[in-house]
Length: 73
Image (cartoon, rainbow, N blue to C red; front, side, top):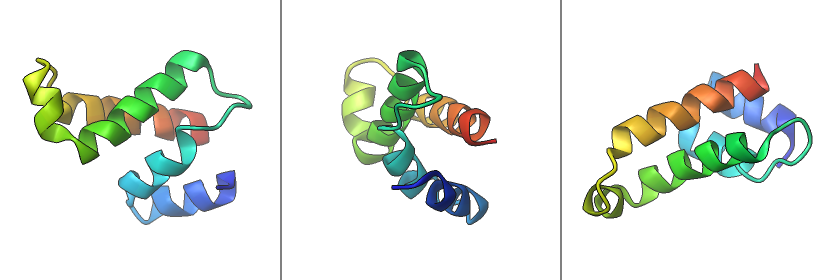
């Protein structure tokens, strides 16, 4: 997925699709940023699992979206 498409998804507030596309970006994104975005995407998909391992999925999602907006800003 291209950066332009991810920006369009962010503008449409479709964060699930935007995170899905951006979590694998390599250029201009650190390993930590990719990890946070991937965690946010996975928390959307597997909220119950994240609760089971002691993580708040809502926090993971918010952090993933914040990094997404920072990277794509």
